[in-house]
Image (cartoon, rainbow, N blue to C red; front, top):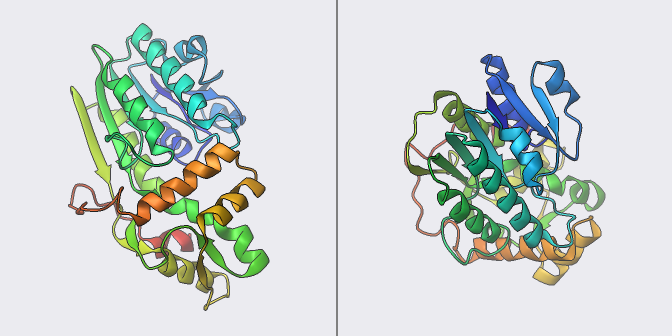
Length: 286
């Protein structure tokens, strides 16, 4: 049995689908969104809250392997504290249930202290997981998700511009969530790792937000779609207006500024082992 968190999301849902196609026994955690379709395809569905250790024990009980993730609850007014509560419940339950192999999803930079934005909370999570006894741990640290570009569609459609606080000409690694899910599913199925291991996933190429915007525009019939680098305060206000909590919006802007400063990707070099296949143009076209 393989226990999965995040099965209603972009990565966890794809991991569940891949494992079910391989006829693996899968148990998924249903929290905010229903997972009836996965249940109909043979997955065992348990309802619970990732902040509750007892619920997490029900998910992990008798599982041979687990996929763990801290969901981005961007409307949570206490985003960081909420993540910390989830991390404590997850690690406590993993320790109690004796899951042998754990694949954890964090992000580039989560292995270092002082990461700006949401990855800072992921560093605490990595430390907790690494302290588990008798658990083989594999941590995936992917680059920026191509999928997050789709969050700009409302702005593009309403104002015919795209924007963020990221320098529009800065090229940095972007990755498709389906490639991350493929790596996670393979590791969970094979369980071919021991001790404490981590792996960067950097996609196939570095892309700037201006390039990404032009690609999106060409597919939307807006071939000259402009990209605007918003001031941090303006960007944060826009995110709050879109439904994020004040804390989550501030952290997301801090992360974008960290990208500009080279904190996350400065000095990283893509290798065959960190390269994944899906290019941005292919992703946007599907």
